Length: 111
Image 1: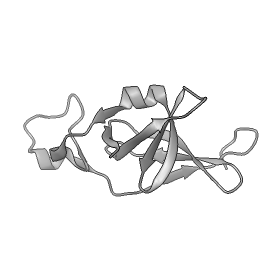
Image 2 (image 1 turned 180 degrees about the vertical axis):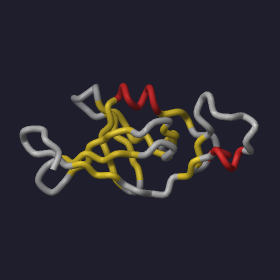
Image 3 (image 1 turned 90 degrees about the horizontal axis):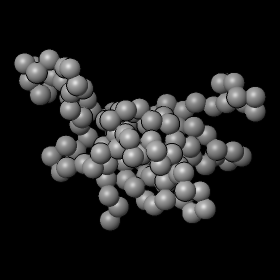
Image 4 (image 1 turned 60 degrees about the horizontal axis):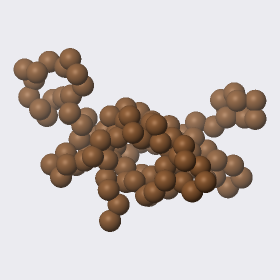
């Protein structure tokens, strides 16, 4: 069974499209599963999110993904500096499954 991780920041990944790869933004607080490092491309790891297999920079994965504990399923703790007097439910963020896809042309401009 793949290990699951919680993303602490919004992170961009690439997914296979019909003619080219597309950029997929995974929102902060999402749960991802580590599949494996990409063979012959050590700077990438392959992850699963919302039924998609995506490539993420290994550096981003190391910096932004934390092992998920069973009680943290689909929630994220308050960011550093948040008011600690608030109850936990008011500062938690849930993953609503929204996918932000950004597309770029050959010149690197967003479509």
